[in-house]
Image (cartoon, rainbow, N blue to C red):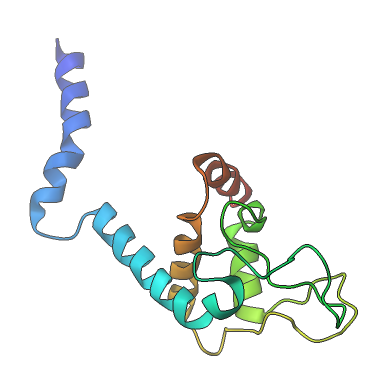
Length: 142
């Protein structure tokens, strides 16, 4: 009987903890995703698409020999990268290794965005993926 009472208490405690007047974890996560979407729209959507659909013909080099911006939705490969790698790409910029030019085809945003803002963008990107892709990416990030 005591085990049952303890089990019920442990299962219901989180529901009562949220009633303290402060924001719950899901509210904080929703605010972070909303902030990430706003930052994405301001800094990323012009190249990567408003719905994360990427540039046209993103799998083939353009006339300069550079790879177009990939999609960040479930049709792309962003979900295959860990949080740390995504953070580094956003903060430091990125040059696709197969580009024929030396320039960063994705500019660095580390001077424009705070670490928290970059994290919010990453959290927003995760909303564009399937459950399976999020699980894979979470494993990559451990």
